[in-house]
Length: 277
Length: 244
Image 1 (cartoon, rainbow over the protein chains, first blue to last red):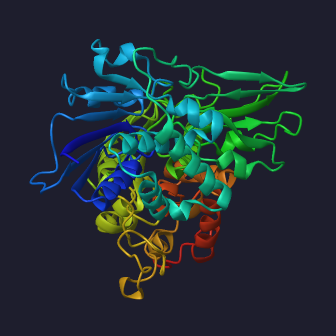
Image 2: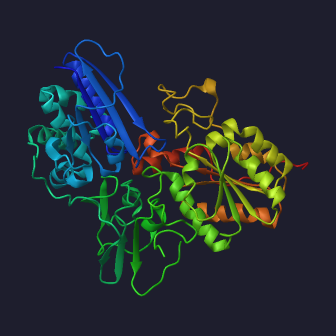
Image 3: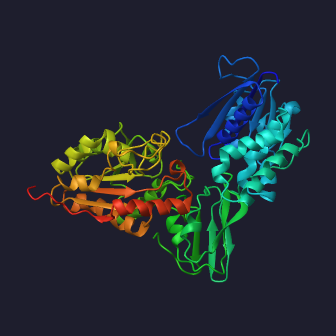
């Protein structure tokens, strides 16, 4: 493998630094030297997150660089950060289910689309989108699938609480590995989180959900006394799944609204005005 | 009007900057509700510290000042001296209040300055990546204590109990938790009201979850908060200083 410079940008919380670490370890495991440098702000979630990966068969004298050979864009929030590292030779892989190609730039000759969030939400869970990117870039770098999966399982092993989660993650990685890139004709960016408020009407109550605000912490699921809240397949602002409320089970007790730290969920009884409780 | 947040919260800055499941956001939402109920939105000055608490800088539509690390209580004390009619609230993390800013806090309690201090205790230095802090319980695993916190670093610091030894008898001291937001809201009300009612120091410590650095999901965060409550009992802390 020649010396390669890769930059991965996305939003904090998507797993940008996780896949960068796995990739650097897998490159180093296959022979050449590899370095990995993370870059992000004081907030640990929700702001642009950048990872610099450099590989060289001989030695790496300095791990940072300006222009990348491969640039992976996982989220539109990081487009401004990514712009500084683009050259006319830079090959860009972007999430075509989340970003419209015209948002990135005019020169679309080197642009490749990968509808990762779409693939992940339809088949596994919205959280696996980063693994699809990891699978694709390791296929481009000719890393064998078994070695990249081995490194992934080593690093994320604690998160795989049962076999089905492990298998779903392996499939997500394999999907990325085997999926071909879109060239010229891209998917529609239909998997952007919905803006505004979702209003669902039940018989005697209605649900308000703000998908832009939901960060997928899961507090509403834990605190719901009747177990009416489940994860849905739709992605919220942080590429995490949104909650889904079974309005028949729901008793409109207001606990999810009280405990939601992000102000994203509320169930109201109809014809009754609630104060802030 | 936004149907999710209290009126005193700024709507433009949502989603806010806190991590998923962060206790800060839950506390601030309740604080906003208390500001609305007491109708002090135009009469409150909100002081924030360095650390995760500074991410509250645009949470509210109220006068906000961000100070040097650990000096929030001192700055709000000076502010209260100059503007006694205002409600001065110092909002700090446990690193700011109990580590770098402990001496400021102790002397303000000793002098019985009429400000409200809210300390959010998440048992680590969260913004820098979850290192061990004075409030970390013994045997807790953090970035800086990979084998569990050793007894040599001392047990977790109990701020309210410490301050209750020196505080004046009119002051109000308590501890709440983000595991029980109804109780937390009542205590927030008391801590905000005390500075006007009794012209005395008031202090509230809030046990808060830090899912990103504790590496827990929502269920485990609440479980860990419950475990913490065995060592850090919730409720009002009795003032044990006879002479003041």
